[in-house]
Image 1 (cartoon, rainbow, N blue to C red):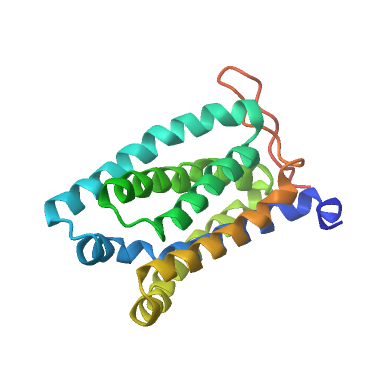
Image 2: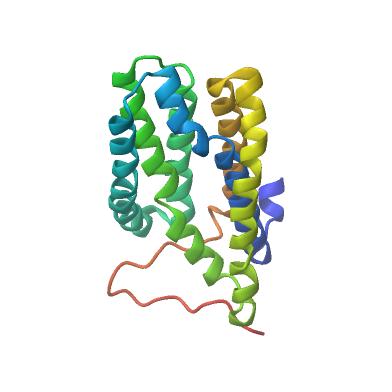
Length: 205
């Protein structure tokens, strides 16, 4: 019943809420992955550095793939598929112990969870009047603050329960953030393919 009550006016708030919850969840674990690789897996510093170099490179490649996919199945659908797989991989990461398996899973999870940032921002801009876009985009600063602030909670959980339990808490929060996007799947238009006529942005009226 909730899905049928969601209107176009709710798109921007739900996207912003989804981003906020996801940032809180990510902030609890992202800052501790290096320690996890070192202490739990025994990786050498050069290997840890190589993993973090591969992260942004893969995100850039997957972002291109996500943009192309969105022209076929829609932006929200692409985000749900990519980030849903990313959350599943994070859950798997909590139970894997062999470094040969952990590193590929971590990298794939990182690429999938971060490749749809541009799509989400385009949805926010398309469904917010031009005069209000600066206000909504300013929420990004709040999101980054929450990402940093949640690291404190993540540190407490890591100290008391360990890295893997904290991964599961992050996965739960990221799943909740995806639930905010599910009602939007039928409301948000697909990303136009290159050369297609772009739909008009939200009206200022």
